[in-house]
Length: 176
Image 1 (cartoon, rainbow, N blue to C red):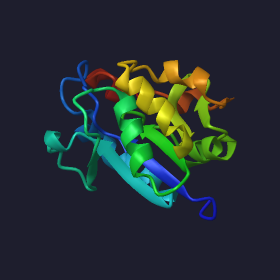
Image 2: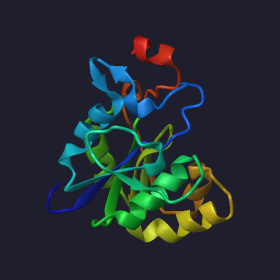
Image 3: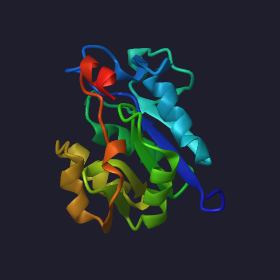
Image 4: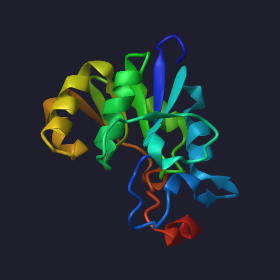
């Protein structure tokens, strides 16, 4: 993978409305969700944590500020694609602790403009050349990543459903 040049983008700026506190700091298996996800992206040549610098989260890595008041994954994707040094970005939300590095690598290998799972746009692999499409959607107030996908050459990769579990509430952590 190293010869391909990958940027891992970890989204840590979510609203966490149903969770009640920042998900990045939540503990699963004795570790913060942010630590788990950061380690999952360790195969990438570059890793970026993207979120709201103003949140002041105490994380074991720096955070690239997404530069917007919008609390939606598209803001993080835009900031990650802007900051990336490599053409292909693997985007992982902090609230998916069961995703394995091999799964993300499969998305990277399949990436045309984009590669996503059967469940939707995250986790996903996106080329930096798609940045203008995401920027236009964000500027227009279209905050749905799903809404952007039809405008891209997107491949759907069938992934193991058991890895695609999202943590949305504190109870979800105890269930996985």
